[in-house]
Amino acid sequence: MPKPKFRKRQTRNKPVWQTGIAKERIRILFIEAEARFDERPDLSDRYVEIARKIGMKYNVSIPLLFRRRFCKKCKKYLRAGKNSKVRLNSKEKCVNVFCLECGTVMRIGYSKK
Ligand SMILES: [Zn+2]
Image 1 (spheres, protein in one colour):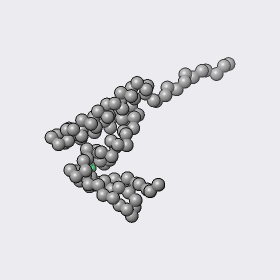
Image 2: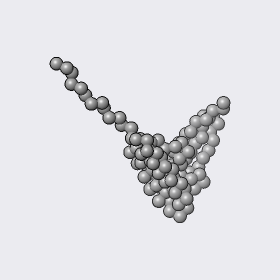
Image 3: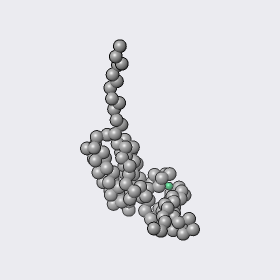
Image 4: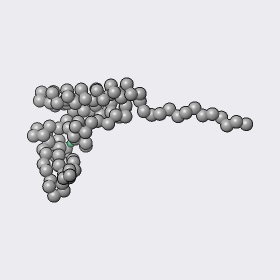
């Protein structure tokens, strides 16, 4: 008796045209969040939330440039000097980003090359 043929398991990856649109939407949302931050900071937070959800749904990672613009804990949009402060820590060789909304410190490492 021949073995039953199993259908090839569907890949989880979304088609390229969908991930392409997802990336574009994330980019637009972060640009909008930056532009609206002065008048409506609550909208900026909402845009970050939507961008993160799009990223999760389409398995798209948020670009590094944008990932540092929101708090990893409270997910609020951060702007240096407004609701976050950025300090260099030469001892630990990292950039400390303090979220003034919830008090989290995000450490971004750097090293001389
Ligand atoms: Zn925070």
